[in-house]
Amino acid sequence: MGQVEEHEDAAREQFDAVVVGAGFAGMYMLHRLRLLGLSARVYEAGDGVGGTWFWNRYPGARCDIPSMEYSYQFSDELQQEWEWSERYATQPEILKYANHVADRFNLWPDMQFNTRVMAAEYQASPGTWLVTLAHEGTTERVEARFVVMATGCLSVPNMPSIEGLDKFAGALYHTGTWPREGVDLTSKRVGVIGTGSSAIQSIPLMAAQATSVEVFQRTPNYSVPAHNAPLDPDYVADIKSRYSEYRAENWQRGFGADFRDSERSAFDVTDAERTAEYEDRWARGGLAFLAAFADLPFDDAANATAQAFIREKIAGRVDDPDLAAKLTPSTPVGCKRLCVDTDYYETFNEPHVSLVDLNETPITRVTATAIETADHTHEVDVIVLATGFDAMTGAVSKIDVRGPQGTLNDKWAQGPRAYLGLATAGFPNLFLVTGPGSPSVLSNMLPSIEQHVEWIADCIGYMEQHQLSSIEADLEAEDNWIAHVNEVADTSIYPKCNSWYLGANVEGKSRVFMPYLGVPPYLEKCADVVARGYDGFTLSN
Ligand code: FAD
Ligand code: NAP
Image (cartoon, rainbow, N blue to C red):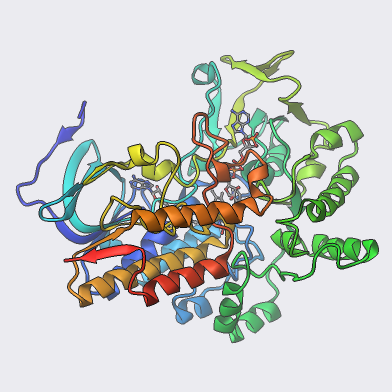
């Protein structure tokens, strides 16, 4: 393997399960596997726990699901004792929480860091996975009966292929791999490429430090204000007094989060009532804006009312009308993930912040000192790539997964195929957490992660109890599920934009709608599959 030295241990380590990734999914998976009395090892490429919150340390990084909901619920003691400080927790606070969980549940001894899983090959006899690890310049193999990919939906940075980017002599950062020690942008001229959630969170803070910030925008995004604030102790006490009921209520909501979902259509009300509803949600802030009316994600005309409202707000927040127009999307609200900001649009009123509309003047190349567009050379000291991720499939595809009939990358060449986002036909005893076809990124992800992990753990527990050694998704069940995922998506606005939900942000990636829209029906389906003796799976010994 090139310069990598290979050690083939005579006595190869064996586990019941190997878990790839030490984000919230991998950590909880380990905890549940241990509760089953199984041996498990988590391998993590980074040198700490937290996944997303370990890597994304850019200024302003924080969750946009309220902290009281963006947290584990499997342990009532944990959710009672942990104190979030703000409505939307910052990256450092979420990372501290992840470390607290690892301490509290003593996860450290079974996690190995700085170790990348390179390959997983199924051995028909004895029916185990041979897992290849790269660690400090060496490779090693371990064996496991089960492999769980807890590799994250947004964990592989999308690096744009811009000519000359590798020749840039200044500092180059991607928001998704921001340096741990932070970056001092004082006296720096900064060019930011991208205007998604990461850019929208970080641009106001970068502008507060830098000499100049030029934002290179390919597609504008809708953003609603966060109105972040310290948490009100009365609100916290109220939620904590009924935490499990609150969580149970949220499982019944479309996105699995408390967006105060309305059951009304945008046309059940008068124009004045509709505007009042939007104003109320705008004033309270956050993603709940999208749940103002039940048909916003499904009906073009209903959605158009929300678009019009936000467009007017952007016009009110940006002084220069031409600039406001450039910052205003023309797409349905929500078909690209809605952003949540603090002073994003207002930042463009500052004299040292400017927008470069790449539709008018595309980037032609990057030189040692500048980003060149069709009509201008933009001299910069720092380039920030806020260009997102190879979402949902990126991390799994980087692992050479070989099942009895071939590789996963061959199987997924025309787009990912998985049953319930939990398993994929042809790959026995391999589980995915929040894989393609699960609600994952169209939900509050932490509860979704817990639900997936619990489903997988219960399934393995069932197999242990019934002395079953193999489980594999059936192709027909998988095909039917994918057809259903698409059928539901096609009733919605989601396929109408070039979003990362469709893989449209990565050059050459197949255009397939990946997440499943609807937490409650998904939960019902998962429970039904179990009730029918793992319907759609083949179990054997
Ligand atoms: P991750 O946290 O991505 O962890 C996966 C881990 O696997 C990573 O540490 C990675 O290094 C490791 N890994 C991957 N491949 C390998 C390999 N081959 N070998 C070894 N290790 C590997 N969701 C919400 O619901 N609400 C939010 O407000 C929210 N905010 C977000 C903000 C940002 C900036 C980003 C990027 C995402 C956000 N998300 C949010 C989504 C977030 O990814 C999930 O909420 C959650 O943290 C995912 O946890 P995970 O464990 O599944 O994956
Ligand atoms: P993103 O939403 O995919 O945004 C990437 C941006 O980069 C887009 O504006 C994209 O333009 C642009 N881009 C990509 N390649 C480009 C190129 N070659 N040239 C010019 N522009 C290019 O990524 P993200 O902002 O990192 O967010 C990803 C997801 O992570 C979010 O949707 C969300 O789920 C999560 N997240 C959440 C929060 C939060 O608030 N809690 C914060 C950050 C991230 P196009 O739109 O034209 O492709």
